[in-house]
Image (cartoon, rainbow, N blue to C red):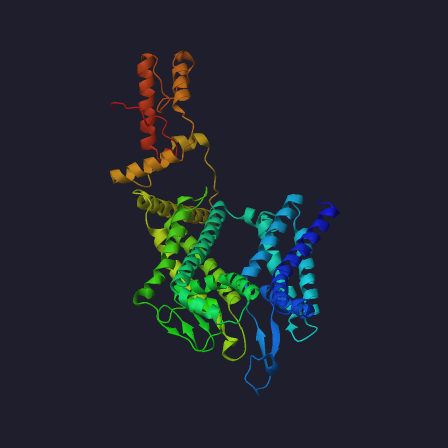
Length: 538
């Protein structure tokens, strides 16, 4: 049971996360104000601007009015109202990291994590609501409820990951109730999905870096066209780093083939670049005027990411994981679906509305991006699930599927026999161990191929324990033949011993009869062959 002081520490962590998230844009805005107008600046307006930026990073919306007196509109035009709804993901990552640290501290304090997590999320949401209300006093209209609720959910999700919440109730009990194969398959699917999302975002980051290097001249020209002093130039440069995370998601959407828009009716894809007048934002200079001819081949990268993720998961499969073909296919489908959902959510957060008119629609298309991610990742994951990782993979897959089919068929036959006996009025009885041993049972399957027999033998050997049984079995057999009078004679079985045999001959006869019994009676197919390395001249 956690102490009350633990809850106090959790609340303080939430307030610190809110203060840091608000403090970063506030420092930048105040620095620009001091560099332009000095200490006579309107710092209250600077706080409102910083609060609006922080609210955007939490998923909120900001309504603004552009007045002709600002100089941003033509003379004689009327005021324009619009809504900003684009998350600066670089600032969002700061909040996510602080929430993750809070979750780690909550888990370190006690295994009862839910009260601490819910308290921190509630305190953070209340702080976001308070800041939004304070920022809405003049001009700006910050969506209070949207900022508070979405911000609390984001904070709670990151803290949940930091506290490893899937290991406690109710998630821990749900996972523990699953079968071992199902639990292993779910674990594989989650790991593969995480690798897919990481690979897509990593490839998007590399693609963005290449685009920045190729379009460096255009970026510098846009940067120089802005009337900035030294402090403002530094702030604008740092702001490009904040929105560079959005650029990574945009590059990933471009790589997936769905592309993104910069204004209503525009489209930037590997096939074409169709844009109109764009805002003066230096990072937009990295967009190529016309894509190269072979740019469409970039869509092969997500396929390779899905392939590599599935192969990596298969190479490090957890104990108890199902290794059949259909089991791996189901893992591939689950991983691709989860990764596509995550990429679609990131595409939704990275875009939205950035201004009036055409700028009401910018960024990737969430549904199209998620669908494209699912198709390309699934294609690569299916290849990774079906490609054999060793020369015996195909034979093991066939044996696994046949074993499952045989077990299902055997269960159906037993059920039908039991039902027919019950319906006929014949009492069913369970045979004793002696009856089972003496009753001959037909073999269910003959091994017609030496390669299949060898594969089956290696499969049975892999199921043994790591200890070597031959040493103590040989000792036990030797001790049994030291005094033949104490040995129980069982004629007609592998334990039959004749007193007129020499000890060495009796031991060889014992091993030969054990091998014969194992071959003639299919009940012993699953038993470990402890005499496998002993070569007898039958």
